[in-house]
Image (cartoon, rainbow, N blue to C red; front, side):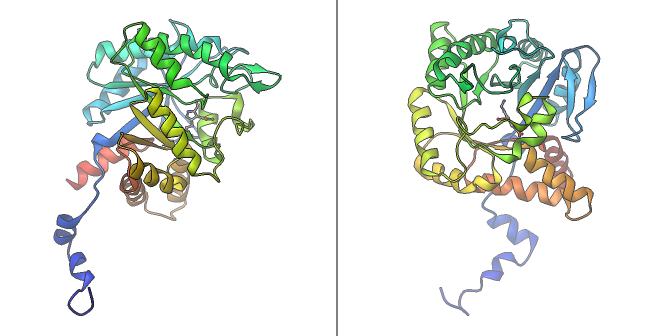
Length: 326
Ligand code: PBG
C-alpha cells in the first residue's frame, strides 16, 4: 500500500469520483421529526428554545404533518405538553389526552405517516421526574404499573411505535406484555435503551415546560462515563422484546453507537438531541459555521457510526437541502 503506487488523493479528485466511492449517505428515509402538542385550539407558536419548531394544538397538527409527509419524512415522534401536572403523572394515560388525541387525528388523516409516541411521565409529573416517587426516589415497579396504562392508551389511540424514554428497569417487558395481552401484536417498541443523563436536553426541557429543567436524573439515566453498561442495557431490552434500540444523545456518543452496531443485529436509532440542535443553530446565527453543511455533516456521521434511523429537529431542513442538491 505504499506511495507512489497508491495515492489516496486520486479517490478525492473530483465530485464525480467522490460520489461513486462515498460510503454513507444521509437520506430522508432515515429521519424522524419530533412534534410538540399543546392544549387549546388554533395554536402554532414557535418554540423559543428550539427555533424552527412549533408548539401545535391538535387542530393544527395536520397541516404541519402534511408538510413533513409530503417532503418524504416517514415518521414523527409525539411529545405532549399538558397544562395540568400531578404527582402521579395521571394525565399521561388519559384516553382523551393530548398525545392520544394527536395520534388519532394523525392516523385518521395521514395513515401512512408512522406515528411514534414518546412514553415518559416527566412531562406529566409536577416534580418533573420520570416516575412515581417514594421518599424522593423513583419507585421503579410502581412506575411500571402506570406505564402499563400509558402504553395501552397509546396503542388504543393507534400509535405505530411506542418509545419508552424513562430508563425504568423492565419497561420493555412490561409494555410488550400489555400490548400482547390486548392483541396489539404489531405495535412496535423503540426503546431509549441507552439514554444518558446529559446536559444536552436543556432546550427540550424548556420546550416541554418540564419541571425537570434542573432536576437530577442520574438515578435512572446512564452515567456518561460508561460504555459497557450500554451494551448490557441494550442486551436486556432486546431480550425483553424491543424492536428497535436507541442511543441518546448522539454526538458525544458515537462510540456507543458503533460498539452496539458491531455487537447487535437489530435496528439502531440515535436521538440528535435539542442541545446538539441548539449548538449548530447558535453557531450559525453568529456566522461561525455554515448551517447547512454542518447539518449534513453531523447527520451523515451519526449514520456512519452505525445508526439506521435518527430523530432530529433538522428533518425538515435536510429535506430541503437534499432536494436542492438533487
Ligand atoms: C423524556 C425525554 C427527554 C428528551 C426526550 N424524551 C428529556 C429528559 O430525559 O429529560 C430530550 C430530547 C432532547 O433533548 O431533544 N420525556
